[in-house]
Amino acid sequence: MEQSGFSRPEISLQGTLSESAFLVNALRSRDEAISRDGYAYLWVTEEVQKITQEYMAAMGHYDGVELALRSRFFLECMERFECCHPEGYFINLGAGFTSYPYLLKQESKWIEVDLPEVTSWKRVEVERFIREGVLPTRTVKYLSCNLNSPEGIDDLQNNLDSIMQGSPSFVLLEGVSYYLERSCFEYLLKMLSMVQAPGSFLALDYWQPSLSQSEQIRRLRRFFASHFSQDEQDYTFIDSSFFCSLDGYLVVEQTDAPQLHCRYYHEANLDVSATLAEHYVLLKT
Image (cartoon, rainbow, N blue to C red; front, side, top):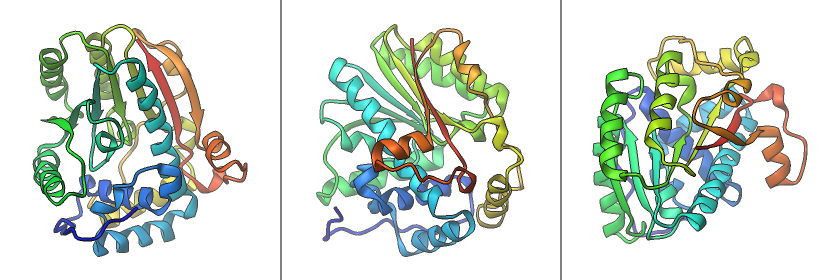
């Protein structure tokens, strides 16, 4: 529920891909009952609302629904991990402006990873939100990393090893896989399989190859080209079978947006042809 008596961050959208994270927060805040993200609104300014309305006009209502479903699914996965491993670490790769540390218990330990311009700015704003009393205090360590670089992934491995020291962990890779080069995506998963202790988890979302020539992808490319200064780039698409043969991990659960729509909305009317049709996987070491 939105609180009063706080000042929203001064956001001047410059048209970079990182700023799409504000859009994600706006879409989550539209259906808080499903997303269970009671803090997403903190990052939603009038400018963010405007670009969100333009996104919905270009992509359709159901893509906004999908992001709330995704948030809920990942949050419930993390809650289960927290119950079993209160001493474990949560690692959010490409964290953007997500609220997960503040939706779980105070004792949870978090590592948030993103580009330097994101982590440095978010840290300042989060500290201000805590001072203003709109966010609870949490233990969050911020690491800067370019996940689309083997060198960046190597540096991240060293940092994670030194921090976690064999503790169980839950790694979240949300809204990231399709932006990574395929070679970097696979290199990242290989690194994580070496860093994560037995009994740890990895959760992520992905797009299947069947989506690659869809009208929704064409619309997304046009929208991002016009709003986030991105060329009509290629995305990485992953077949679900890839995870079944992934070294170091076992599949715990695979699902998709229509199934989550049935689970949380208790109705089966999600029009797959009108969405980006995300798939989700939970893996265990």
